[in-house]
Image (cartoon, rainbow, N blue to C red; front, side, top):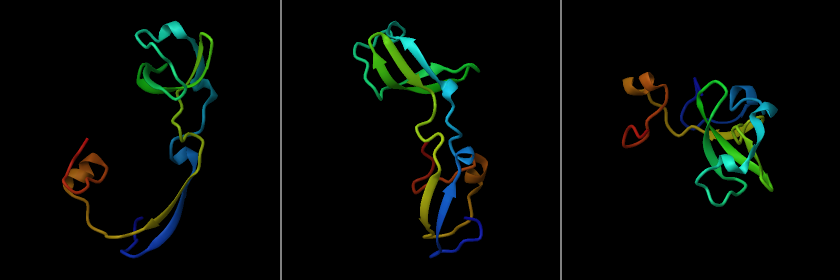
Length: 113
C-alpha cells in the first residue's frame, strides 16, 4: 500500500509463500484417540494446541476420525492458498511510535493484544 492515497482502489494477490506458506503434507498425522485425554467427544474441525517437532506450540485441526484413528492437520487453514483482496484506501496517516515498535497498526481505542 506504500505510495497509495485516500480513494485509491486496487486488487492485491498474495502468493502462499508470502502468506501462510505452502501446504505441508508432513504436518498431517494420524493419532490414536487415547491421546486426547479429557475430551469426551471428538469432532472434525475441532482444534487443539500441540507441540510441534521444533518444540513450539502449534494449533492442529481434526480433519478425519475413523474409529480410534484421528487425523490432525498442523497447517494453517489458508496454507497453500493464494489470497486475493480488493482494497480501497480510506485514509492515510503516519504510524505511531508504538505501532512501529510492534510492527502492526493499532485501531481505534489503542492496543488490544
